[in-house]
Length: 251
Image (cartoon, rainbow, N blue to C red):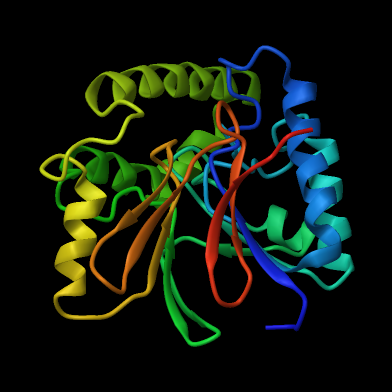
């Protein structure tokens, strides 16, 4: 890690979400945060659901996001590594986005050592056996034939369908899991990480997905970090080489 530099983490921006009233202000806020961290950033980890929907058709992509996409290019052109994890809303990132902006895309969890600390990095969806119905749906969404068939749908219709699904999915998840911390018998990522720690050590588990900004001690040495979101919390993670901090951005 470069002396004096930091590593930043953010998730669940949901650019373009139908529940956001002012999309331009929403995008500008996140780009302003990227501007603010650029002088001290050695790496940036975008931990999933950065877009509320993204699909790369053969000759088209969803319109908008020009400020954000331009900022990604600026960051990578400046030599700052930007790591992009696909989430359950932007699972259909293919070749265009990394080729155009220079980001590194991850579709599976990443295990990485940083300054002697072991990190487990993932969006947080589809990891556990407690999500059987979602895992079946994810298997469909990642199926090559299903993706190819979706391309035959006109973008105006396909994006409308995705936006409708996004709204319904958010409502169902809110009813089922809520955005508040559940007790340990119900918080499935906490249950799963504690089982994982019985066989293998990690210092930090960094997840998005749950839309809550919270640090959860798992044992004396390990912590789970929920990064929050950029809809209500405007929260992010900062690793300075020795400690991990959850912070909240203000314009």
